[in-house]
Length: 267
Image (cartoon, rainbow, N blue to C red; front, side, top):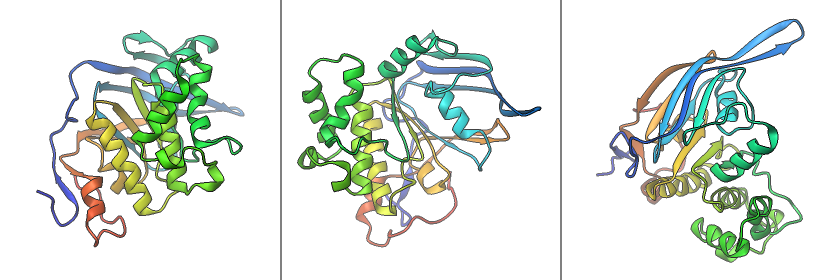
């Protein structure tokens, strides 16, 4: 039953989560050299993510959460440690192989959408499939846009879409290649509360269908849509626990009193 706050008890795992490890990080370190100083952005992080989980990563500014996401998304390499993705050691691949694995295994959603302004929505969704030499690109791009509710906007350019619609295009682009994991860096950071909730409804539905999802957010309200919370501070994992009182976006949107996100994280 939905509570007045728009949350309800949930199992620790997503509906289709299982015990198979998709991601295995072991003793990950990331050190940056700035002048004559070393900055330890990550300091011995170990983390497993199972197939079908929905994980939120939170932490204050400078905590290392964005660095962790960049390593998870193969956008950066660790200084030390092991990263297994679907059983493959991907932490130190050369650039060409890294790009191939990233394109095949990971769908990434950015806060700023990263859409090409001269391309239509469907053309933006097709882009990663062009790089990956995927067949039936237009058909798959249209199907992905349908999954995020944008069938009637697929021939519009980004300037003709709202911020929430642009982020839906970005999600469609991320899932069109059918990746192993969907990763999102502050996916609701540039949209209004209701649009953010609509975006989280899409993430929850994709996860319900079996897609593994990982998101970085600084908003407790957004984190509470996931099934598991990983809190990062000073380059280390401070806490890792299930979220038992999830916010279900579809039900939150139906409640007229929920105009704004509010309240602390309620695990």
